[in-house]
Each structure stands twice: as C-alpha cells, then as structure tokens.
Length: 456
Image (cartoon, rainbow, N blue to C red; front, side, top):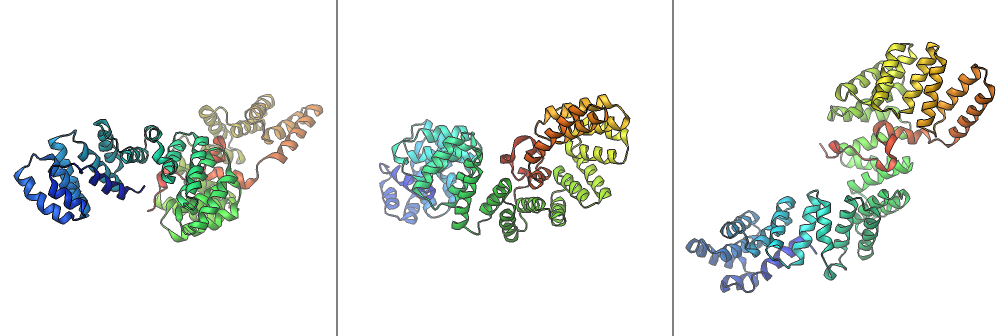
C-alpha cells in the first residue's frame, strides 16, 4: 500500500470511462508522452475541458513532472471545484510529495463530492496524522474496512494515531498487529516502543528497540530512542554506547548532543557532561535548562563562581526557573547570606507551594535565625509534601532532639533511615538536571526538548 502506486492506479482507474478515448488509451498502455502530445493542443482548443486538463495532469505525473501535473489538476478544479477525479488526483499527488496539509484539503474534498476510493480515505487519514490532527485521522482510519485489515501499514498508522490521542493500550495492540504482519519493520518497532512507554512498560520498550537496532544498527533515530529509554531504565552504559554512536554519526544533531550529555551526567562523568552541555549552549544559547545544568555541574566540580553565573544566565532567560532560584538560595544559605536565601526560597514557594526541597531550605534559614518552632513547621510541611524523602525527617529528628523530645526525635530518625534506603539512586536523580520536569511527572516523560530536536 505505497503512495506512489496508489497515485498511478487512482489516476488510471478514474479515467476508464473518459470520453477522450485516444489519450486515455495511451495512458492505460503506459505511453504518457503520446497522451501529452494529444492533450496539449486539445486544451488549447478547448480550455474549459476539465476532463482533458485532468488527463494532462495524469500524463505529466507519469512523466515525472509533478509541478506541471499539479498545475493541470488545479486548472481542472478552477473550472469545476467539485470535479471528483481532479480532487483525488491532486490530493494523491500532494501526498506523494509529503505536502500533507494541502493533500488533506483535496482528499477531504474528494470524499465530500462522493469518492469511494479507499486509498483516498487512507491517505487522508495519514495526511491528517502528519499534519498534527490525530483525532481526525483516527476517524478516517476507523471507517476503513476489510481490505485494510491485512495491511501492516494500516495497523501501524492506526496505532500511531491512537498513541497521539493517548489511547496507549489500543495503540500497543494495533502496533502489535502490524508487527505480526511485518515483524522486521524498524519504524513500527520504534512506534511500538513508544506505546509501551506510554503504558509505563519500559522493559518492553527496551525489547522492541533492541530488535529495531538489530534490523537497523546505524539508524540514528533508533539509536536516540534506544539511548533515551535506556536512560529512563537506568541502563546508563548502554545509553552511553548508543548515544555516542548516534553523535558520532551526526555530530550536528542537537538531540544526540543533549542526550549524550545526559548519559555522561548519569555516569558521573562531570567534565565530559559539562563540555557537551557547553557545546549545546553555544549552539542553542537561549535554552534556560541547559544553563541551569551547566551551573549544577559547575557546583559538582567545585566551581561556584561559574555556577552562579550560569544560574543567573538561566534566570535571565526564564526568570521563574525554580531550580536556578533554589540553587542560588542554597548558595546564599551556605554563605550565611540569610536574607537573600530566605527571599529566594519564599519566591519559589510562591510559585510552587508544594516544593519540599525549598521548604527544607526555608526551614534551615529559620533554624539559623533561631526560630525553632517556625523551622519545625517548614520541615513538617516538607515531609507532607514529599512523604518519601528522608531529609525533612532527619531535620525534624535533629531539632526535636535539641528540644529534649528524645522519643519523637528517635521516631523521626527511624523514619528517615527507612526512607533513605528506598530513595532513588543518585544516577536516576541526575536526570532531573537536564529534564527538570521529571521531578513532577515521572521518568516516562523524558524527551529531548522539542525546540532542539532537529540537527543544525
């Protein structure tokens, strides 16, 4: 079910009953040049002949002149906007050129004026899907019947549309049907992995992508997808290998660069991660998260001055970037600049009252000022905001013990110790440096930033 063959088939079948028999017969016989030679003088003599213009478009398409073909089809439609063959043909031509928004316009019009060609409906669905309208695409796919149920391409496109409307279970099932018909399709395996991710089945996604890599070992999109999922799964060394291969193959690919920095970061390779993030900042200077990541890495490398500059650069681009405000607040706290620290922490809490880390920071400021009861309230609030985090319980244990409440202090210490054993490893936590949204959405949300996905 390939677009090029659908295009030619539709062109020919639609003209079987044409009154312009010699040209139509020449096209059916595979002699487009002969047909064109007959049609050019005819349209000059009969400029209002829609059927002749449509046949001329078919001839031009078969002679690999899509521009001339499009002009001829559009001339037929200027004469009669509801002329079914020209609507189908120009829509299918535009589809073959991957001009999906315009293809959808004409294919939809063809259906409105009575087309019963299933290829038109299928290609309309694909065009709508490629144009960012998955819900409308889904409606078209669902109207296709028995002729398509044995088509791997149909089940794949249907599954992709379902994924885009977040019907992950149905997408997974239909992509599995596609793979049962065409198991060695690397593109479908990638889509099936995406559906598995949507369901939170990361191990299944890895399995699909391992198979895709075996089929297309040098395919950069597959390498990037595999590397990203391995980062989510904590398979950091596998991620590093795949992403290094992708970046070596396409050094100008910003997504590869960004994900590779994430792999090095997860493996504690701070110098390599910093070099890659700095290169990314040179290419994409206005991406605030990258400056935040540079600042965080600089802190790890003991370069506090550079870190402060990068956090400030982040805030210049995005004044409400909570991570950068928080880190500057922490730096102020450690330097005993309590007014500055408190101001920054309160600003973050105004933006996000549920930020447990900042509640602990504010509690630390209040504790240093001697406001023990107020500090306790902040630590208690932090424990409520993030029940699985050990730090606020350690702080509570410290203050309660100092107050002489040994029983409550010991209880909080036991809670803290129990939670500390269950907390995520530092490698997993480091993903939130390049993807701050993960702290609130779960690791299945990990994506390369949309603005930088393309190569330079």
